[in-house]
Image (cartoon, rainbow, N blue to C red; front, side):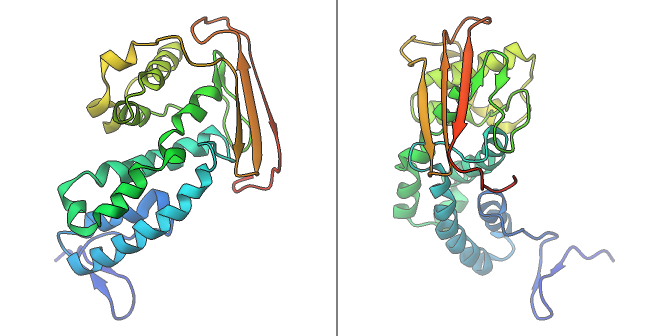
Length: 232
């Protein structure tokens, strides 16, 4: 017979074929939800820990939604962070998470306004690849969800424009379920062309451009501050 159990320690065996690494924004909440059917008591403990520890990860977006490691790792962390927020809306999580904890996440301006950082770090030719970013662009499809939830169509519009420019297709469930043509093709022209961010004193970044819409727009960005961040 094939066993799908996982031996966590010499005394603890789980009835699920998997484990979660200690990466708050990436695995902890999702692992608790996956365990809910088979191990509800252990899932409760894990979710309690996840709700508390992921709050510490949110500090990485302070004070204005920026991210010290650049857009590539912003996208990696934020994909799972927004998954965690989306899962908080589900019936399974309602069983394990207190309403006041859910409210804390959904009222955190740094976390929910961070798509602005993604937009300003991308110009017509790609992203500003400071920190541990890669050249090109970060296809942050989770922005479709947060754009709807915060009623901020500009972010969906700019993401869609960037994807079209790079001939990129939808590849995540966040894009499939939360893409809204009414948002993705709407730009009211009010977003300022220039912006400065202060990523928790670890990296100050600024960008400026001549246009949001022109494919040949001039774009420049610069970074200051401390380079001693993770993944460097």
